[in-house]
Length: 395
Image (spheres, rainbow, N blue to C red):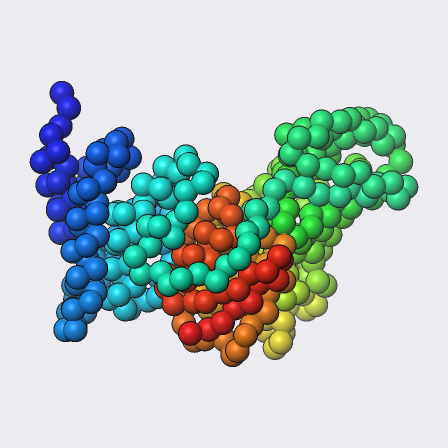
């Protein structure tokens, strides 16, 4: 039996009051996306919240805090939480308006031509004059003999290196070593800006490489250790072999594991080298210093001071890139722009000094750059995009 419109209006009211269950919220989302006839309700509620924003009196902090908390609790981690400027009612209301008037587009996007700016009542006129597509699966494989092979999502090919078969298919590179005593060569997989790629190493270990990353590895693991070299960012799922530890060398730091899942972020333009453990055990060693991580912990090596310390890890945020998202928690514009530059292959310049404004949220990496920028503009940032040069003007 189908529910009436009144039922969903009550659900929406309960959602705003914070008493909606996750199951009811899911039912509400499905109803909102099911027909254009439901959009007048969204429009009416958007107008009400616009009036609240334009009123001169302050909305009690307790109210805005409660709305923000309920929003973050009820929206699935697999869906997009629009960027927001922390602790300001106007921004909280913009999140709510996006949830009401724009979240159907974000959560259930099917129309590629839809412009998010039409759903952002708070956004100012954009000065974005062009657009850039998101990154794709692509890389360049350099074989031990110097031969280079272009890799992408569509390519399917088989290469033979000695007794090792290398197969490219569906955006992934797979190695299959055969026999012992074979000659060892070292291949290098380079993922450019605007790319990502997945590789299955000869021992069965999986590595996902983020944009602007490089992995050097042997065509077969035959010694007492399995050693690879990383630059940039990689997520590893290591095939267990207690007799042959797996070691990642990165920036004079050694990460040693037996069988585990972990992420290494070692971009030279970031402030630190971060090793985040999801499962198993990892030993991080640099010179005489070493740290043994437990699941849910992150080792941080600061580039400027050389200090190493361990802290609790935000796993979802750390591996958001692998699952197809950007995720930020009170991040400055420069932090966001470094990730944007790598994924969209753009050069970022700043029109004036960076703002102290902080942002948080979760956004799909499959969106064109303009939509990312529109979301940031709705929260006070300003941009000018010409070709692949993006200029940031802090408000």
